[in-house]
Length: 231
Length: 231
DNA sequence: CGCGGCTTTGATGTTCATCAAGTAAAGTGG
DNA sequence: CCACTTTACTTGATGAACATCAAAGCCGCG
Image (cartoon, rainbow over all chains, first blue to last red; front, side):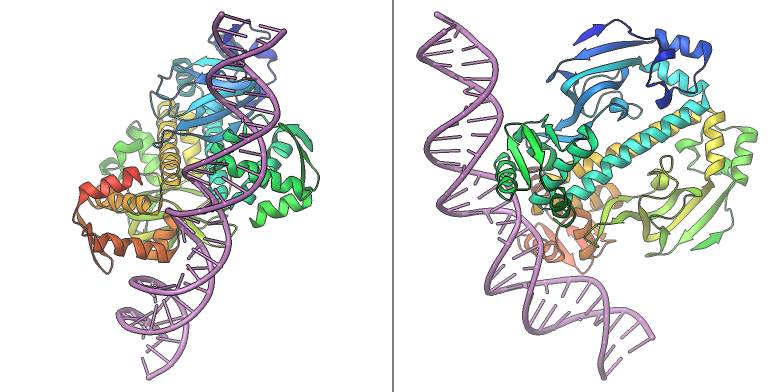
């Protein structure tokens, strides 16, 4: 991790519209003084579960995984987050320690805001509070709905889902490089590494996708969608 | 469903300490005018998913299930909520329609507050907003953590968990009446009705629990805990 | 009284995890 | 830079966990 100089004042930040649009003048000035920018390389830990919460972080560029160690001592990935998802919002207002770990799966930059300052802002600016409630609720709903949907699918459906997820939601391209290892994909959609590989190979043999190492190319999105929906 | 007369003014409400402790005098008076009490019998629908959100509801007495229809056209129970869990808080700030259904599984009374009034309160009272954020975050965290834990357990572990859940968290008694059918238990912990029955019988044969219709009595909590933790 | 829903048990088959074993790739130290 | 270790990837064989199917008893309700 590396602290980087503020490239832009909050005034000019393109993420301002996200949540901080209602902050004006002096408020935004103080805001700018209570934040710092951080840079994480691929694989670096951004937040470690059970550590104390002192800052609220949000992702400006990159890609991260939200994960947690299960009782089986294996790691489980709860969600993948990209910019505009408010990654560390989770559990920030409910506990004094983080419930989840967050790790960069691509080089990521993060804006960190002092948590006490954020709380004082909620108290003094009602519209900001409402925006925050809205964003928080949406983030959680998405996680619950996704896990809910995945849990009623078979292996093939889950693999299809995750390929479509990276293609449509993250990279917006039929061809992309998987940011996760086969093992991590298993941790994300609840299956063994062997079966991740097996089903990817199966899809390749059936001409649904092309595989070259970590590069995936969707060759038949129609079928992939059907497998995702029915499987 | 039945609208019942206000039994007590918000001033005297024992649930005030939950969330509304910071409302004083006039604020609380207006609050009292913007709410109504509702009574639901066992089995009645409190909230239907995809319906418009006009009120924020919270449970004063009884027990409810939060559930949702899956793509498999089967119902899935996401969580069981009792008084002090803020049932309809979920998705209230993120969408204009409910994401989930809520159904009474025991006779329940609910306090309903106009949603626009609640929003105006968030805007004008920062401490109330912070309390709400806190409660919302806790509610969601609990759901995610519970589902997370259940998903890594085998059938026996899940059944053990649910028996302990009702015994320790809901009824505070070794002997209790299940508020759910075998089918609903399956919907809650993701297994078929037949397997719910099979494993309950197994536990009975092993002398871990006693079963008489819907009445369950825990006979060996030690073992049940071990099955829950290891299974 | 009979119908539908809930419960129970057994038999069967599918899905998936585990085990084993080998290849490829990627880091590590001399 | 090359031997060495480790980590990631891949495929097949086996068995366990679990869903599905079938059949029958039970109970509440119109």
